[in-house]
Each structure stands twice: as structure tokens, then as C-alpha cells.
Image (cartoon, rainbow, N blue to C red; front, side, top):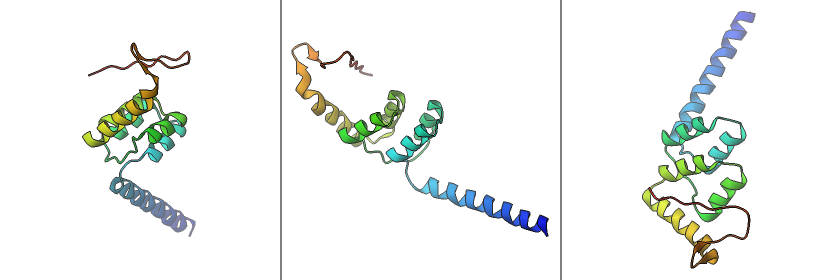
Length: 123
């Protein structure tokens, strides 16, 4: 009787895992999913690989990028999110960052009133 209960329990667990996996494959990866992965302590490389191999629906607006930063999402993960975004999403994120930094634009470039440096590179 114990064996029968254990077998039933194992079958239920396996089926629920299969259903959850199928549901995850149907829904695109979002900012909240990335934050959950970061907070759970997954390695950065695993998160980046998940982003690269998944359908995505990221909020890459200025507010979305700020929320990611405040949640501890690394620059490497954010870059992977930007790379996975559609060209329209990437252009919108680029405009949002430019708009946010416009107030700090001077003749010598962007200057922020802190000890931090903002470095950009073009690929």
C-alpha cells in the first residue's frame, strides 16, 4: 500500500513538472522572470543562456531598465535582454536612455554629478 501511494505521488510530481515546463515554454520571458532568476542566485551565464534561447517580452523602457538595475540585474544580463529584443524595442530603449541623459549633456559629452563613470561603446 505504501509503495502504491509513493508511486502515485511520484507520478503526480512528474506530471506537474511536465505541465509547468510546457506552460513556461508557451509564455515569453519577462523582466519579472529575469529578476526572479537573479534573486534566486542563478549564475549569470545561465540567465543569459535562458534569455538567448527563449521567446521574450521585455519592458526596456527607461522605467523598466531602472527597475532592473534596482533589482540587482547585472549589465551583462541587461545587454543580453537588449540583444534579444526586437529592433523596435532596442530603438525605443536607446531613445529612453538618450532622453534620460539629455539633461546631463554638455559640450564634452555626458557628465554625471557623482563618482561614477558612464562608458558607452558602439559595436
